[in-house]
Image 1: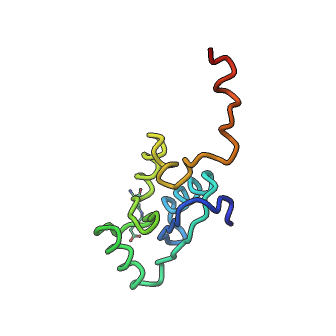
Image 2: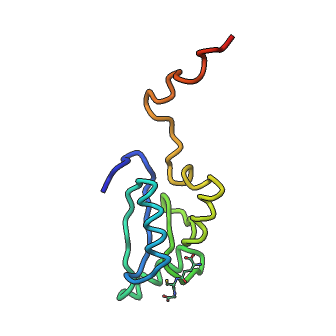
Length: 109
Ligand SMILES: N[C@@H](CCC(=O)N[C@@H](CS)C(=O)NCC(=O)O)C(=O)O
């Protein structure tokens, strides 16, 4: 599901029937970013790993970008509401050719 190969390395720890996980994944899908899902349902070692990496947070989902803890579902939704999520996901890079003058400059002086 690599739709944007330039975005950061994103990991999300989940369990299968968790509505917050579904909502978080839906938001990441909407952003068009690829992510690695780590199902901790039957794996206490992975749940422990998640909690350690997330600074003690025990609930799922927990989302990481380039190895750094981003937060839980509500956290990424709040970041998105503040227009801060795209940059954290590596989506604010200038697209090749996309910024070529179409709007700027036409009526410059
Ligand atoms: N505020 C959290 C709530 C997450 C939450 O409550 N997750 C539930 C599953 S939907 C959970 O992890 N419950 C404890 C557990 O499953 O051990 C968020 O936004 O992600």
